[in-house]
Image 1: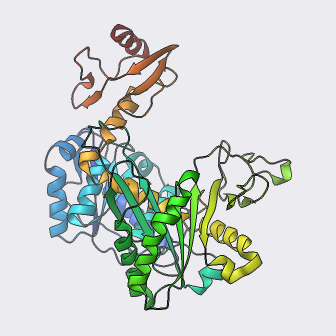
Image 2 (image 1 turned 135 degrees about the vertical axis):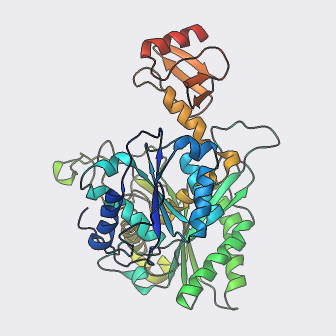
Image 3 (image 1 turned 90 degrees about the horizontal axis):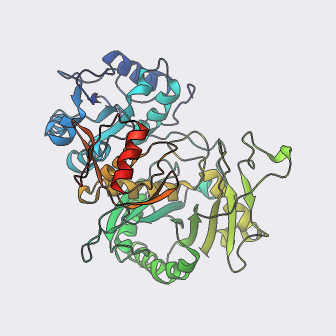
Length: 478
């Protein structure tokens, strides 16, 4: 990872700063020297456009409580905007700090328009942690408009540069208190490429009726905006549009063609000149299925015992009425690799252009795209348009504080004791505690001073309680 160099620099980040978010004032901080070393690595080793020293602050730390429960974080963002800060690096004591990440992203993305990155302190305390520097650097370069990597040999549609790739996904509310008549909305994320580099994917997100799987009428205007972005970057409209839909079940295939396709065509009719419409292909990508592949001999086996990355299965176990295939694009480090399942619902691009080679060209394109995910230096398990759309949905949920469930999830994680309590990830669900099936309708909160406290008022315990003490409390309650 030390040898990672970006293909194209983004805009110059001349004014950036950093902030430690500590549990206590006395906690160890990441200092100026470490951050300057990090910036020099990005500038010199990765070839990025970033100043080698941050904008200095009177103090580069605040407590987590001040960030969450007082105006400290809001005031800091206000100062940063007034002083034209382009990028802020927040250093967290742990990976997720119970709503702190989502608050940072809301303030940065929606309120002040400042790029933010959240780093974990323990990774910066390690000397010469170049792998971590590279991972974070890749994200920062993308946020500044750069290109991290390209294929060594472009081919086919990618080489011509006349094809726009689109991805969209729908996420539904989970782990929330749902009041009838006031259900939290489902969120749609839409991304589209803007040029031949396939590095920048400007996104849109919008709300629709709760649990509604199919996209509503907003798709037409959203799609028109993506076409306009392509035109502004290329001075022309794309000849081909390939759409990857994430997470559509087999029973909804007909609805995609009957309901969503007409809205896409309507957007094209309103954007393109008369008589000149693009060719469309719609492909559904699914990761949540039970199909797995196993190598039959050691020659076809990866180091982790899985099939080699790039394995395609397009016959024998595929669906009879559809054009579909399974692709294992990534190399699983442990466990059994789960292939992605792709189903073609509409094709006006590949058969028209490649004839009998249409299937091979689509499979090759999908596989090569998996190497172009901007945040990774290896192939990812699912095609980037669908992957990015899923990320947009997660970010859109974080930007709506009224539907934020990060506190509930962190509370649940804090209750978990490995080997004793299996946690379901929400505020209501079921657990097995040493043979007892327990319906847990308990909600926990992380108190600033006390640790873990039972909201129900049925008992209180410190977060350093031993496993036996936790079990004793559970036995008294149930």
